[in-house]
Image (cartoon, rainbow, N blue to C red; front, side, top):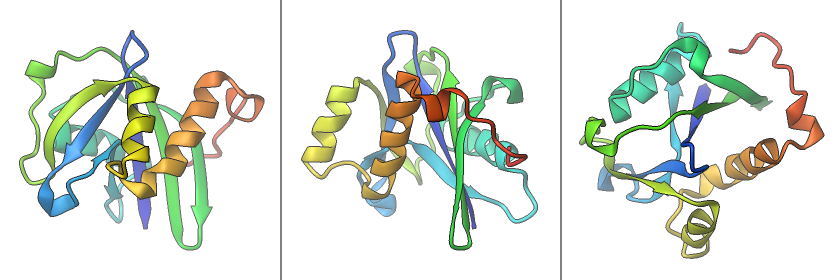
Length: 146
């Protein structure tokens, strides 16, 4: 299985998080999803943005900053630095209840309260290291997994 996670960061360095619908566990999380069988990872990320949030962007705007394989699963983490007007987003009613711009402290608070999607906490920690410019991520060179 191929899984993509897209960290959307605005000019105030806040992250766009979504409260998932009750059918999708009702917790907060980062935009993510499964890539279809014959779909390229970046194309899957673009599709997830469109399906869940109504966001259309150019492929070049997404930056792959981390990928890994665990068992049979491949995970790609992408970064999108862009401001969005919340009123222009078109949320998927089946998947997303609402979206918010949050600081890292607000997200940490959601994690402490067990209101954040557990599976994404590790990806969030990787993103924090990437943003801090830690050497492993600052010079990261994905090997053909976009």
